[in-house]
Length: 167
Image (cartoon, rainbow, N blue to C red; front, side, top):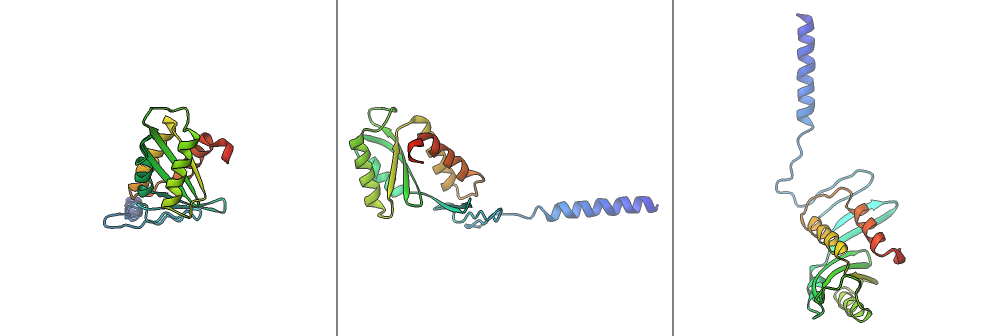
C-alpha cells in the first residue's frame, strides 16, 4: 500500500510539473521578449533585435523603401531589409537579369533608399534569384509578428555569401 502511495504521489507531482511548464500563450500579445543569452525580440512586426557577440542587430522591413525602388522602371519587385545603418535590397529586374545589377541602376536604388531614410549609410543590391527568395522569406518572417529563433545568424550568413567583398 505504501509503495502504491509513493508511486501515485510521484505521478501526480510529474503531471503537475509538466502542466505548470505549459502555460505560455500569445493571444492578444503584441510584444514578445526572449531573454536567452541576452537576445531580445520585441515588436516583431517592425523590428527584430538580437544582441550577439556584443553587437546589436535591428532588422527592419522597410515597405516604403520597397515601394520607392519598385517605382523605378527597371525594377519589377524589391525587398528591403535594413540593419542598423545598412540596407540590403533584393530585386527582380524587368529584363530578368540575375547576373547582377548595372552600376547606374545600383546608384538609382541607393539614392531612393537614402532619400527614404537618411540614416542609411550603405546600400547593398543584388538581383540574385536565391538572394531574392531568401530576403522574401526573411521579410515574411519579420512581418509574421512571431519570435524567430536563429534569424540573425541565418540572415548574416546569407549576407556574407552574397556580398563577401563587403564584410
